[in-house]
Length: 331
Image (cartoon, rainbow, N blue to C red; front, side, top):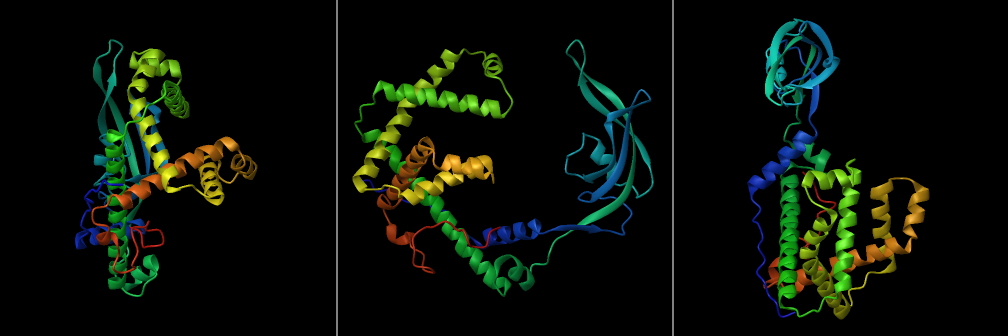
């Protein structure tokens, strides 16, 4: 392709490595029993809580042996603030005003009296930033070796992101300059597919199609028309990628298709072997996987072919172009 674009790649700094190391430490943090008797923000406490409205115990505001990360906002507003500062095994009573909607639609405060007792306190303990951490999370002997490994991994990830962005810009440029006649049938097929996808997402969320239309104040025809406005661009992009893949021979192998279908099936059904075996052999699923792989290969090809400075995309450490960072130390 004659299109050449500058790769916009983010520079990785020591601060990025520091942040990745902190994520590693936080991911391996543990909550351990504390002899401290006063609760502080960030503590993990076990508490009994009872909520009363007009003197009547309300189960919806009550819990026993509740694990609470103080200050996380996981409790109703006002409760966290009152638990912080409590002493272990010293009950406290306090009042919280909770907003609710009255019968006439106005927002009013409801007074809830809480009785709380903290049974124990645990504090967060993160591993030290040392050679032991490097051995545990990175499979290397020293902290400096882990920093070097992370720097390498993060640079490759930034390179991958930059090439992905470049490929998308290259596609947009090709689509703009390509004179491709789009059959109306393909546009209507795209509209129907997007409508099915939307309805499927709503079902997964437990929403009915009619409820969605009512909430949006639109008819199904109006939703179709919205999709019809964007469908030509989507279809043209797919046609351009398909043409490029055919021209460059970017055809996925049967094994690649099988692996992609298996991954799609596994994401949907987990370890259900009967469903996995059935889906892997399904011609429709193989066609979908093939289309996805063709588009992916075409995008990857464009990312390399349209790079104005491909030499700078090579890694001095491993003498390869951008790759995913699987197998590298992860934050």
